[in-house]
Image (cartoon, rainbow, N blue to C red; front, side):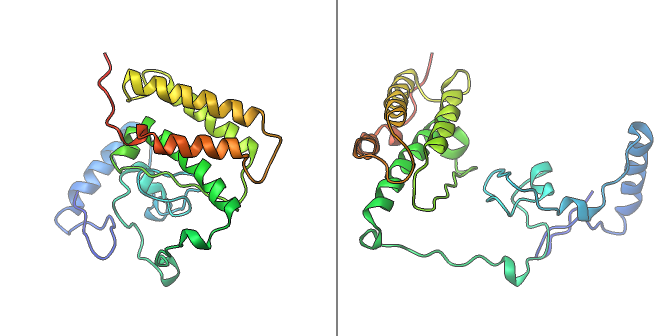
Length: 208
């Protein structure tokens, strides 16, 4: 089957391809008792899913079934992304800087443990309203523990031990934290120290 590339991807076939496609689809339908999926079904938005480089809210069913490198529907003016805005650190409050520092440390741990993030085929998206919440940190730590278990983790043995130690330190800080809002000074100090350690920027060691 051919894929005609225009300003956006679709499944329109050339005239000489249509008879072959009809024969193939008819054979599949007769063998497996299924029917062809209408094209509009594939363009349905799938919430809370982020395959590859797509961000939540812009993922379509075709992205999950095939590839996220195509634009499956013609973009509308409302779909155009707003240019990014660079925010100077001097314009941020101390509380927000503290929250972002802790979140950055968590993202760096996930990046070290996930090869798809290191390769650029996946990205980590973090949303914050300017406060830190204990339950969200506990959820993130639970995911980190799963990634630390072999054979999922791709990092070397030494790096894995350092990440486990850093995770335990953060868990202790979270357990002693009484709530929501500005992270305690000790937690921000841990995050700053971890980000400055260079562990997250080092190449993974080969594990035996």
